[in-house]
Amino acid sequence: MFLNYKPTWMVAKITQLTAADLRRQGIKAILTDLDNTLIAWDNPTGTPELRTWIKTMQDSGMPVVVVSNNSAARISRAVASMKLPFIARALKPLSIGIRRAKVQLNLSSDELVMVGDQLITDMIAANSSHIRTVLVRPLIETDAWNTRINRFFEKFLMRRLRRRHPELQWKERLDG
Image (cartoon, rainbow, N blue to C red; front, side):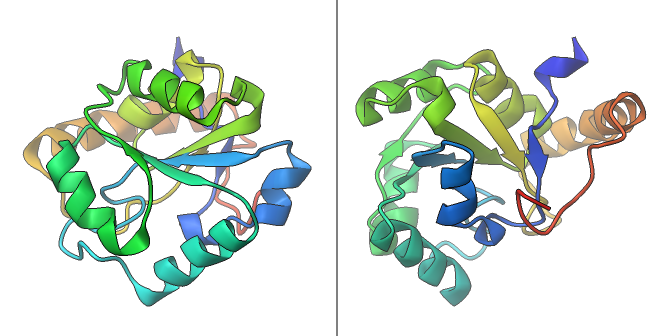
């Protein structure tokens, strides 16, 4: 049961991922959560570092697609300046949104990676779709009420996962 929550990799933030590292893993596109993964909810346009990272990914031919439980209107406002495609109302932890992104990109599960800050939504949705995952630390400590509930349970889940899988450590990049 706990394998449903287990991330493939753990890095502190999404901007630590590089196209070269992802390609070495056979990955051709990045699916990413929005809030607290790509942007902080209180900084809807993202940081300069994030905008540089997105441009670098786009220039290297590595598509970045937002897969979020938020409404299309909310995501559209948040990613407008970044010109990112998105899947709204993804219904994570169900895999519906991830399957839609997979079809949209016309890629197989082993060519995708899902990046997210939550075990209970992002990791479960991706793992049930047989897509590798990157767990990142939340960008900020404050969350919506429903996410705070998830975070409470995630503390126990992570403790148990790390006990069973000591290799689960925060790293600077995928390869090390």
